[in-house]
Length: 278
Length: 263
Image (cartoon, rainbow over all chains, first blue to last red; front, side, top):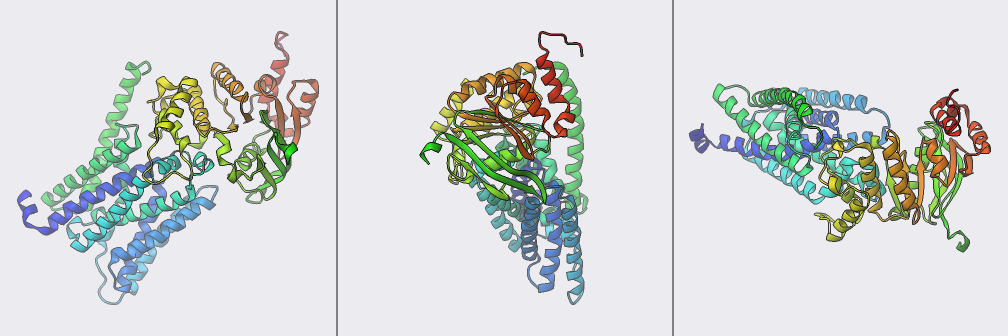
């Protein structure tokens, strides 16, 4: 495979995009699991499909369509979260379905032979073009910059929103910004792993990383490293066995997560037994 | 204006609705500086809502709240807030020191912010004062209830407030931790006004200076002597509080101290 990497640009693109996606995912994934935003992120991810359809319908780059729609959906979901005092599961579920439906309708309305949507649904890291790569790079830079610039207030918001508001942190602004960053991250990883499988890359690595650290910054760093490991190994499995890359990565992550969870449970029994307080 | 100089908080005709359900109606309350006010009342009686209205977290439907003569959102630096444990997740990746440092942030925190030496000094001296220094690297989920509560009090104090507002600070703490928290509050009360929502009737009798009994309306506001009169006032609170059971049982026990524990 190494020889092929030197030879083929599509493999180089694949590896670069995997690393870039890992960075955005490591950072935003850590935030999503800490702020319990998994469902909402799932909702935003699925509306991306509507954006892909819109892109085809308008004859523009589908990723740009996805970017537009996911950002709109993110603002919508953030607003719902602000205004709803009870559970947001129902509106999120409806966003989820409506986004997917929009995509299918746009594709149906697009004249000509329907495009293959599998790339977007399940990811195909080997089809990342140079243009896609530039978009991914830009979005990645925005995510990293925003999180680094606002790290302390963001952490305050994530940990204790009410207290943060009381001391004057602009929590509403941070919340909307965060949802936009989630949308950007989703767009970054669509090619790598696909809309349907995104949640694997966003949630499992930080959940594993959390076993090794109690520091948000390190959690983001370890998640990123894990993501790079998962995506590159997944890519290698997919290339070697000639199976779809998105599914290979997602399945590999799930497998590791399952193993780690089992080991964690066994260890916890031992720790409870051995440590009478730190 | 001059004669109101010692008034820390003034609530006038405050009415708050949550989605058409009245949470507070026509509450009038005046808290003097250096007072130690306990707010009691049944669950859903608007205790936390009143606290939130004072903090500017909920907007009044009608009426006004003034903190040292200013609207709450303009008085942010004057108030320190100690929320209930349920307001955050205890498994969050943050340690004691970082939690307390958080209080040094504000709306003016610049981008790419780092905590200054002064921030760290303030936090260190508070950690020493509240016996948290040896625990500074602990993730907050690994603290006992009392340690966590002291961490939250320290965080509120980093704001260097004139008023400390606490939402059920002793709920689910053991007796020893409770008395530790009260001794801290007593010490703080020398220099600042304290407002505490609580279910702990024992505290009302022995630690709190004045008392507000709240069930959507303010039913009683005055001295917190555990007199027959006060008990009558408490029973005068709507049925919910009586049915609530726990406070009254504690209250009775308190009256029976040294006497026959047999009911």
